[in-house]
Length: 140
Image (cartoon, rainbow, N blue to C red; front, side):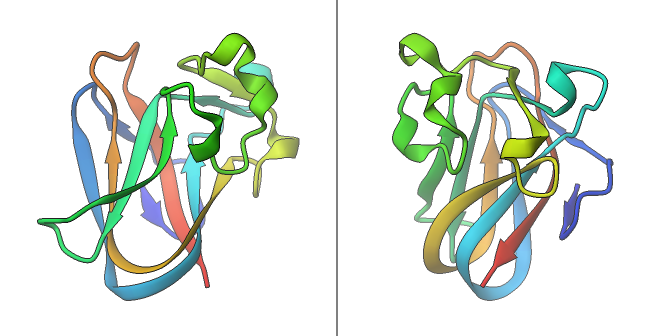
């Protein structure tokens, strides 16, 4: 998992687990880019979006602010993922998202508009399989 452009080296986050990424400095983040693992041979040639939560904080001890949650059936916290991907109000684990809808083939854009240093990536419990993250990046 990288800070910056995706490189195909995925981080698997097990159900009920998390990973904290240090951006290095307090950083103004207009948009966070969450790069799910790109799977050109499966899931319609894009990504299989896993259930995952993304929180940001200025400290590893919190408080944490949640900005993204795929798996809670709330379309208001899904970044640029289109609402039609969860018919009937369900956000399925491993949902196929075509690359044409993503930033740089596998990136989901998440509006932030704040200063943070730490990004916490969490897989809810229970979940079907680990959440896969290739990279995260920020846009000023």
